Image (cartoon, rainbow, N blue to C red; front, top):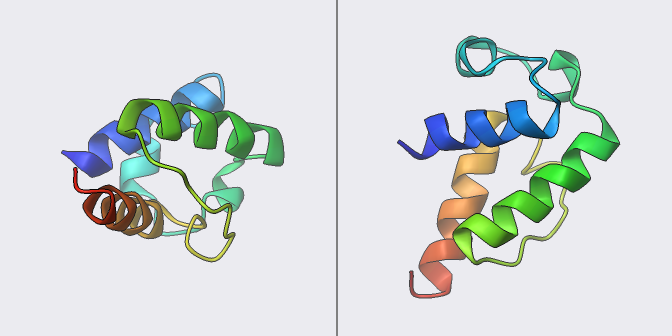
Length: 81
C-alpha cells in the first residue's frame, strides 16, 4: 500500500512521466527513471504534507522506491503515527 501511494506521488511530482506502473516495476534508481531534482523537491513537500513527517533530504535513502518507503515508514513510526 505504501509503495503504491509513493509511486503515485512520485509520478505526480514528475508530471506523470514516469507513470505509476513504471515506477513500481523499475529495478533502478529514481533518477535513472528521470526523477529530477525539482521533482524531488515537489515529492518531499508532498510526502511531508501527506504523511505529516519531516524528511531529511538524504539522497542515499531517497534514491529508490523501496528506500523511500523505508525512510517514510521510519519517520512515521518515530513520530508515533
